Amino acid sequence: MSTQETGNIPLSHAPDGTGYKLMELPPELLELLESQDPPTLTLHPSPTAALLKTPSSTYSLRQKNTSNALILLAPSSASSGGESADDGRPPAAVGLNAIATLHETIELVPEEGNTATPAPKARGKWHEKFGRGR
Image 1: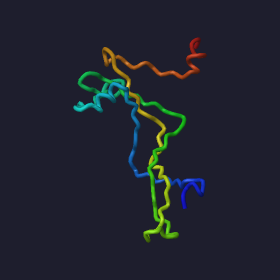
Image 2 (image 1 turned 30 degrees about the horizontal axis):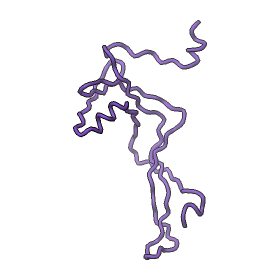
Image 3 (image 1 turned 120 degrees about the vertical axis):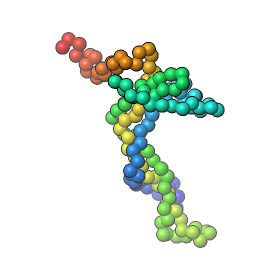
Image 4 (image 1 turned 90 degrees about the vertical axis):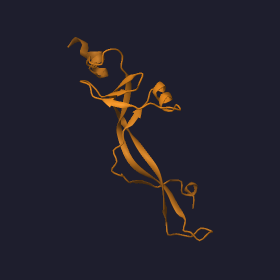
């Protein structure tokens, strides 16, 4: 039986215990990593953020929280013990496993000039509109 006949795909939550972080790569860094001779990237600490260094540039790592969760899915197929297929094997139930739920991503911000200067303090939209006079 296909999923088109039932109208849905089974979804199960099967965390594998691995912690995942998604990282947004700037286009120039992605191009560098996909080149024929990709460089070695290194992480270094700084007073304000972790720094990712390439031979030609430096990026600070910033965490971005999201209100909408990102769910990493992996296909799954399990024998369903129902009718057998034409070749004698039991049919496989096709579905999805949710292997992780993410509420934040890592953003790479190009560092310019002195990396020892503190990062600007993040403020919400409310502070931008109403908090100036306080």
